[in-house]
Length: 405
Image (cartoon, rainbow, N blue to C red; front, side, top):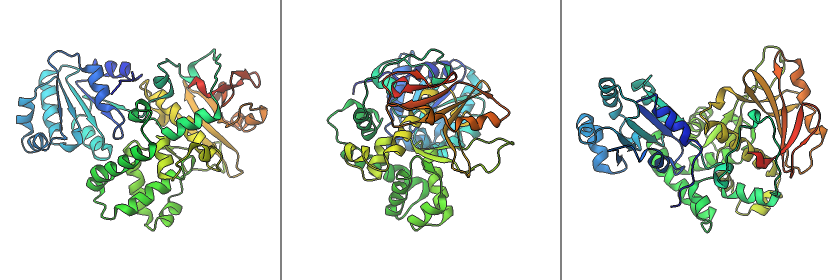
């Protein structure tokens, strides 16, 4: 398969210079193995093993010390979640050798993996989440972070049709590289693999049809406030089960929860997070959209466009090694006033509105004034849209085309 250069490569190299163990986590088929091989395959004498092979997996689980003797560092170990027994022995090795950039691990099942990693390798491991290909990676171009780009001057020829074609195909590497691959075929196989290999093992779900109904229900709510009770009711499960299943989707890297902005001076604020599917192609498949034109003209078009933009911003920051969980939030109060996204950068709040429009007006800024009541520094605001060029709306806020991402 053709390799598309990943922006996160530079961050991974930095981590490997400071930690003996590097873990790349993310959903299945997101490109973790290929990324690690491309980034560190040049390391002298490095080996690669995958725990997908039953015999190697059994050895790693039953005799981890012997496994590490047979496969000494430097080494890439794929699907480490299948043998968490290795982690304490890797700790022993790195404590004895005290050399950075020795163990490169990948894992899909973050649900259990991260708990084991944090317990066994605290202070010895650099962790990097990986998501699907970003717009800039697909285009082969570098992009500055939106809030750090002081002179955004950008022209875009993209149309609503081209954007929804991208939304429909998603960001999985295979879907980007193989233009003839049908989303229906790819995501159908993807869901089946996810159900068989991850969900069945992790939650011991006996009725896979119930979980499939739940994940489809979640996909249909992308871009909306999280309402566990509604999702549980719609899928005939109890709230605790819904919470546990949603937690799995989040820790698997498939879903991102955007927390509401919190401030002591704000009253009557909505406190539920918003839910976003990180791969819009998978969300389209699960919510039964099989035509990008139909989706573009549907009532869900705005939610999918917002999901697409939010996921791109998350990828943009994560690929630079920035944890967005403490930097990204949204605002909504009980009066229905909302700011789609607030990015905190160096103590400065940047409000962002997302509009599926080619010519947003000052009306798009109407809720930004809410921030003036906060005891905070307010920076430049942005309206991300289908505009073909950048233009100011006032002295502090501007319209930018989606092409800046």
